[in-house]
Length: 308
Image 1 (cartoon, rainbow, N blue to C red):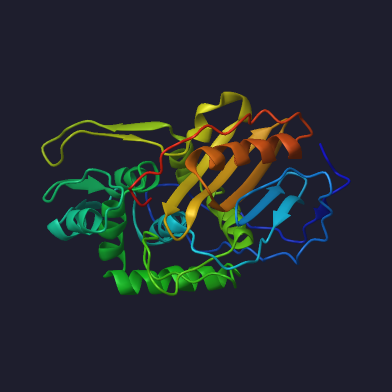
Image 2 (image 1 turned 90 degrees about the vertical axis):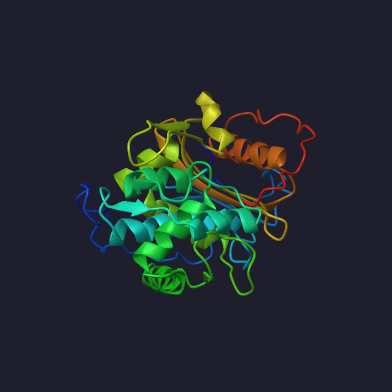
């Protein structure tokens, strides 16, 4: 563990209550710590616009780069969407997918859960569709139900952000698609991640590499794969959380991992490629844990046309 370059956080967060199928009580708070005076003379080079990494076990900041800079965060927005849904919905609620839900993803060139109009899925299933393939169709369906309506749902997202102390964050939609006025910071997104990972339901969803839904009378079969490729590297102990990409936001990632009995939560905003995003996360985790960097060279990788 590197401790010479690390400053203690003053923040603490409260645990959630019951996990059940009912909505979770809105009791969590997440004070934002003062900017740490971190010296990074031997820290790894990070090409992302902003990055922030915290050792939550030791309650210490491990790495910071422009952590309070306001930037678009693409589909990291869906982490707050999941957080609000958990406070508004029962996991067993059934939602009927509409043509508008499907059209929303298709018309915006967004990633989707492959949902079809007319099928009905539970909130639990839609959380997987939201978080694993980063389904804009799932985000739209959930927002329409639990706003009710997207504008009211976004208001709930911003109210939750304010209550959590995310002063550098403003949401304008539930999916992170390009829109004027939406932004957050790496530090705010780490604070949010620390809170949502304390929700056992979201924690289970976020670390799933694949989720299968068997066909039934009310919906077709679905197989959703997690876009977070860090989960594929077992030695990193990854437990989540969410990828994001738009042209404006670049490649973003909220990640969490358990290594040597320490839990790390980090955010990368505005990385230059999907491959470099992964390499940066691995590099930061290696450095924070005091291990030789094993991220390796960054291979060339095509930029996905899908916004996620």
